[in-house]
Image (cartoon, rainbow, N blue to C red; front, side):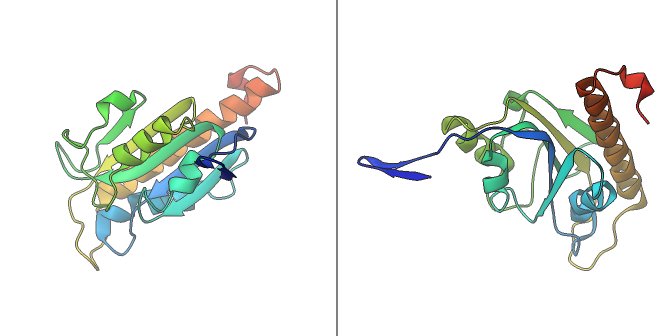
Length: 176
């Protein structure tokens, strides 16, 4: 942010290249640790910047950093079945009124609305919500949520690899 005579103004900077994956949750609360498990599975993957946070508000700076592609992974309350993966690319579908219920203090939709209002929302965003069942302190992660985390991490890795191959001018199917 830069000071101006009328207050503060966000400084525009170049977009970061690659994919940023913001993984939300609390691993000490059972299924709420889904985001952090995905982060652990993705750590060290080329072309992917992984950020762990307990809440969307804690990740606000990362979400608002100019970037090419943003992926957010979070556990959500059970709506249909444990381990179901929701993928949102249309932010209008994310609301505090719908089935996307986060256990964090500042809901993700409000953080993203703030970034949009400030003009710093990345052009490409995908949000993964993994339905959980048990969010009690000290509980274990459900096996179905653990498996869903593996599938989400694999999907993100494939997408990042395809993007890297495309940037090099190679067909995505040749990606290693």
